[in-house]
Picture (cartoon, rainbow, N blue to C red):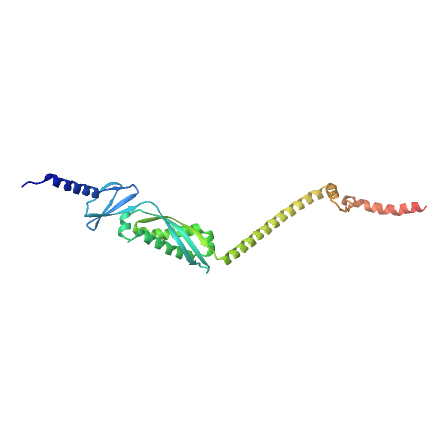
Length: 263
């Protein structure tokens, strides 16, 4: 009885090649393999070449890169009873792959659902003005809540950003009117402050002119050319205050001049 070694060698080579091909895995730098042997967790492997026992070991490939989660628009009633819509984006990454596999069925789906409920809860506890003006504070609050909730899953939430806040059309018009009124109020205040400063400067200038004899008269002479250049202007030239001491003498001379003219 003769054995056909040539016929047996080929199947043996095929089986060994298949065994080696199935047992050697290449794990990238940003990946880890969570390996189970006969149903029991034996740890994480990678990066590089990893040896797996075929038919005995099972593995799940987990990425360690940051995942961008787009939270869909959520309808929210704020604390001041305004119906609005809010959406956001969440950035997170897996830091402990074995916990992300063992402690939760689908960590991506679970994180997405948790992000939606947390966004609705936080936005509902805030007022509309907070959603519009204090997004950074709300972002940090949502990030803290998500990070604490996903920590048992081996997930680290790195950032949360509220992207858009939808405002009803009627409320948009009211906010626009409020902003216009606020700008007008500021304009009136600025104008009043300017007039106040101008009045102070004018009072200081009047005090300086009053302290010098003939000061007002000199100032009047400087203003007259500007008035004369305007069309249809009537100039009333007042008697300088400095000449008021001459009035009594002029009144005494008027009767004498009249008597001399009669003679």
